[in-house]
Image 1 (cartoon, helix red, strand yellow):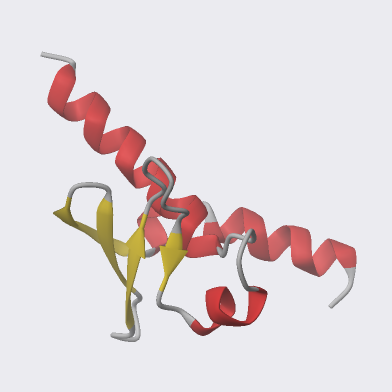
Image 2: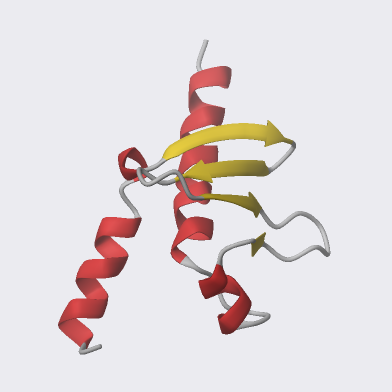
Length: 86
């Protein structure tokens, strides 16, 4: 994949609206893709690193983040803003 194609892929992945996000626990999110595929994302907390159940996260290994982790961070940020801004 060339650099331009990779940049476009990452920009698309950061669009929270592309996925259906559901908060399922403290810093835990479920991502449902339009095709019905679902992944669970655990955001980093304390000594625990962020993780995702998608194949990309598995192949990237420790210390790397997949697009779902990046998007879950944005979903968490928006959730916190909507629940603390009152």
